[in-house]
Amino acid sequence: MSALYRLTVAEAKLFLREPMAVVFGVLFPTAILLGLGLVPALRAPSEEFGGVRFVELWAPSALVLGLGIVGLQHIPSAVATYRERGILRRMSTTPVHPGTVLAAQLIVALAAAVTAATLLIVSARLVLDVPLPRHPFMFAVAFLLGFGAVLAIGMLIAAVAPTSRAATGLATVVYMVTMFAGGVFLPRFLLPDFLMRLGDYTPPGAQALLLGWSGDAVAGTAASPQLLQLGIMALVAVVAGAAAAKLFRWE
Image (cartoon, rainbow, N blue to C red; front, side, top):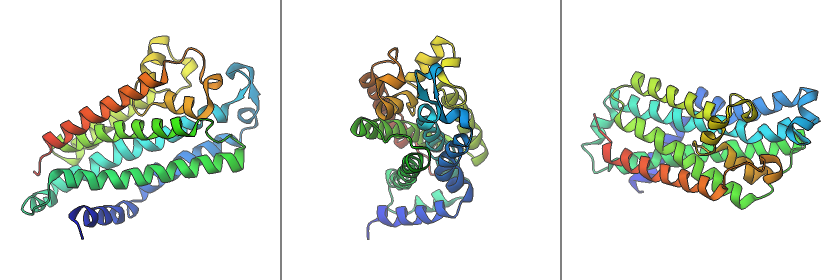
C-alpha cells in the first residue's frame, strides 16, 4: 500500500470528522441556493437579468462559496494544525515527501468539491428546475482549473503559516477578497466595472463557471474571453502549487 494511498485514506476520515468542513464546504452551497429558491421573486424571470431567473444566475456563485471554504479555509487550517502539533515534524523522519502530504490533502479536497458540485447541480435541477450546464465540458474544465487555483493558494498558505491561528487569519482574508471580487457576496452588476473585470480572473472563476453553465446569453456579452480566464486559473494553480511544494516546512 503506497504512502499516498494511506495518507489519503487517513485525511478523508479526518475530513469527515470535521462537521464544519462537511457542512459548509459540501452541503452549504446547495442549502443556500435552495433557500434562495424559496423566495418566489428569485424564481421568476427578471428583465434585470435578461429574462433569466436569479437562481440560475447565482447557482455557480453558490458553488464557489463551497470551493472557497474547502480550498481556502479547511486546507490551510488543517496543515498548519499538523505543523503546530508536531505531526509534520514526526512525519519528516519517515520517507514521506512533502509533495505526498500536499497531494493527499488535494485528493480529499477535490473529492469534497466534486461532491458539492454534483449535489448542487442535481438539487438545482430537481427542485428549482435550473437547467443542467449547457456546456458540460467547458464547465468541468472551469471547475477543475478554478478549484485547482484556489486549492493551490490554500496549499501555499498552509506551507508557510507557522501556526493554525496565522493560517486561519490569512486564509480568511484571502477568502473574503476572492469571494467579493468574484461577485459572490454581491451580484456582479452591483460592482464597479473594474471590480467586475478583476472578478473575471479571480480564482475560483465564478464568471467562467457561469459561462460554462448558462452560456453567453446569461453571462453577458461583455464577459471576458473564457479561454483567457481559464489560462489565468491554470497559471495561478501551477505557480502557487509549485511555490507551496518549494516552501513547505515540516516545522
